Length: 277
Image (cartoon, rainbow, N blue to C red; front, side):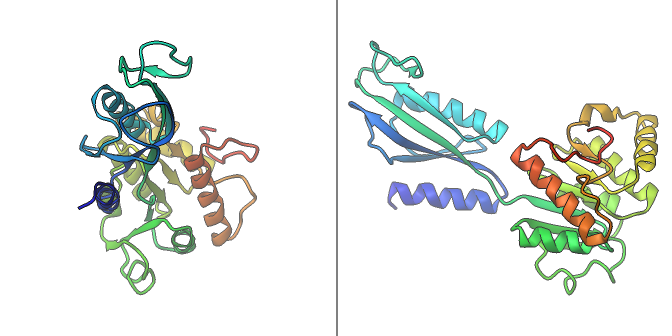
């Protein structure tokens, strides 16, 4: 099988496994080097390398940068000097003697975000529908099979009924998974959040509630021996942006808008409703 085909097949396979992967590509080349512009290589989250864009010291540096990219999920460009003299100020020296300088893009290719909707009622339904329209993978959890079923959510990756505070741990496990708790029962919502924090869930969590209930929930979590302030950059409650949302669909819009803002690293002007903001 041609090398380039193996690279792209690996990327597809990793995305199907819900893993990010780095595509490394030579985007510019000046002077001599082992590979030409356009050469590609994939680096997986478990450290496998498929393809080659130079070998030797260059690939060693690239693998190090790829691992960093997979940790912070940020695409980056790096310039490498394949010579020992006349090294550009913005280039990484490699002690090579080929003579050229190459620029390499390390593109982080991520699976589509997963939105885990805890609660399939008035807000959960438009929230899941809109998340699907945005191209996100959707998981819907509820205790009521009349609300959470494949007829109401034919597009969902998973729909499951049962104790949502336990089921959520099955589907929310990675940083690109986002949990939105809109179940609506105070103690169930609190226990769901508490379980996620105890489990060490690395993603963001939204909880639909009033400011008073948010404070109550945080106090109960502290009583359980968890310091929620350690997770303040990933807990959003009350959920959503302050856009004056009133109807269930408008509330869903405000929450999804905040999810998009978090994913894109955007900051106010429109403030979050969260007591942590």
